[in-house]
Length: 394
Image (cartoon, rainbow, N blue to C red; front, side, top):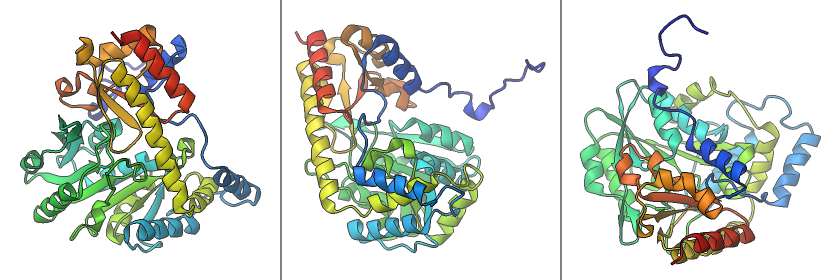
């Protein structure tokens, strides 16, 4: 016990307690409910990628500290992937950095690039680590809210422009977007690029769902737009694309100066991680395009199963153009408080979800929305959909 009256947790992190994911996962366990809260798959990824990890372990590759920037094989695979998919060229030795998942990459980028007092503009609602990482860097977060329009959550470009001030250092973007499933369009990205160039802003883009886009949506890296290659830190990872979230292998691609800056912070976080898995992810990135298409089609079918179940239960559903999350409006059920709804949902329906309000600075904006994950086995989603129908359908 401390004898000081000073709070133990520093003031930058005082607003952050236990994440909602921990609370909801514990609730799922205690009630035996289907957990559609936290976004992790309930099946493993490709057998050949798992075997590549086993082979690396047996061959003694990565069992000791890997190189600080990441193993050469993975850095080369990242470069090949970016060029093959998007026509972006990077130097594997100076423009790629391997991280302990995308979350560490985001933390390292913000710690490296944001000075205390700098403003960071982010699209609200946002993945909860964004707010914590901005706080740890001493920055001031400035949310720009995505709002429902024409069946999706859309960005107001005028609001984004108005949010940028002389104190703005960086834009933090996520597309495809968690939790809303929005995929920024080519026109929206072009406007963001023009704004970043005009106001001389750095941009960090979280693109971990790059291979999960549906219907007519297209993922286009912001770094591919004029003037953005030298000012954009692009982040992705293996967890969402290959269903190995526990491996925690992510990467950064950016100009040499930006990679050097991010690495300066990253080396004092984990320094290195996931040695054998890096070799396996290098092989995963080389899988044929048919793998990515099959993965996308499978997730699209799962999206439709859960979305239909939610609609039949009476909720208003925003079918996502990307990611593996569905946002639903609970107001048609006569409910307005998503947090209260999610805390009682396990008892009422045997299903766990996440209240979207926890991803907002403006909690009132997200109050009636709830997020469901559909990265689960088909039979699990079918069961969850039936439970929700029975609990709420009139």
